[in-house]
Length: 570
Image 1 (tube, rainbow, N blue to C red):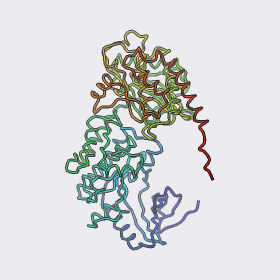
Image 2: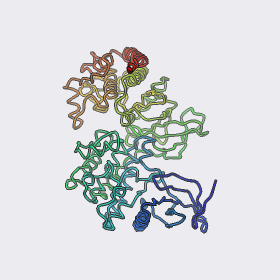
Image 3: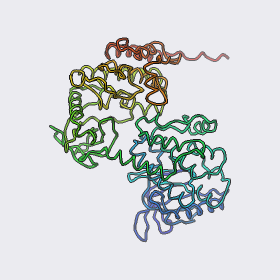
Image 4: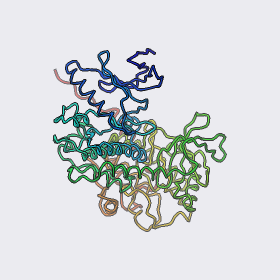
């Protein structure tokens, strides 16, 4: 390793580069403590301006005393570069984290968003505006978040207006009034914060769009903004309303402040953190019944209606597992406990590549849990958020796997009842794996066939699930039809302003036609699955799987022999 000394600091390995800035791990040669050093390359064409901007930003950033604002410890102008020295805490830009790992959980987003909102409230209380809040300027690590890039804030505080485009740094996360050329305000920061949280949790820009440029263009054209409750149905209603209010395009009608939004985010995180039962904290070892070695919990991975999921590893470190435990609020509900254990043990009998495998069942401190295989990759809902509608052959092949998985669980008498994209994991090779059986029921258990119980996610529920009738396997087949429709179009077949209007559409409106470019054979399957009467759908998942396999094979064969374009004549 080549070590370079700059002033009183020895540069070690490079951490990462962003534009003209390069960050290094380093050491203070006098005190011996580790630090981080940033090197800024100077543009010779505007060297004096770069120096003035740099030192103005460093003085401005140093004036804030907040844990989510990365302070400079020293600044230098040496060897043709500008240097700043910072504490060792560093992080990954949140946009890079999301693109690598997928959308954040609501717990993580509310935790980091709460820290960010508190930092903005600190700035706003002193009369300053950040003006550049966006995923790329939020650094995240295991301890939380830090807000970066104070060039714009420093120039605004110095009375510079209008700003140079490079300093203004407009993006799809900028408030609409900024994109119209207005000076940013505290309300603009609130909009950008809400837009950032929307993107963290759904990878969606406020007005939609597949790219940053398209997202900005849609805001310019006044395209109706996305409502966060539509792309993250699991978000608490009060938080969804607060974020939607903060995203109002008119700053005069925009609701909330950074401080009030931060308080709500902190409370949301605390509520979600309370999902972790006693005895399931990170680092704890569990020994499932009959297991030869214990499993160590590595952290919370997600949650469903009745359970919370943790990532765990075997004591020898060779294998990774998912552990699903009953949520604390259901621990004393005897019926919920019996259902959780009954279905976990029923699934233990299923060994199928399209159904998550149960490796063991146990109980810790009165809380039952199930050990499952850990599926690397995203769920189908995240895949659709990232890629949109899928090509027909790919959608058909994924649907085949889901149907085969349903065939396996139905054979054991288990009805899923909440089949949706976010409950289908996508393993390498586009292999779907059905998971989250939190509201599943056993058709064979008499006490589990009660009627009049409303469970599931409305957009994927069959019409009869809203009636006082016994459930049947047909509801899972209907859900697969809704999922296949979404894979082919990027949208659920029935949507409404809220759950009630969605339910009315499912019950009363005919299924929408698929686009004309969808193969008729596949469209016919979707149409049959979405029929209102359960007896008019497929009789079982086996018959459905056979039809889907035939269609998928035909589509893939047609794609392989697709004719080449005619030769261009001389």
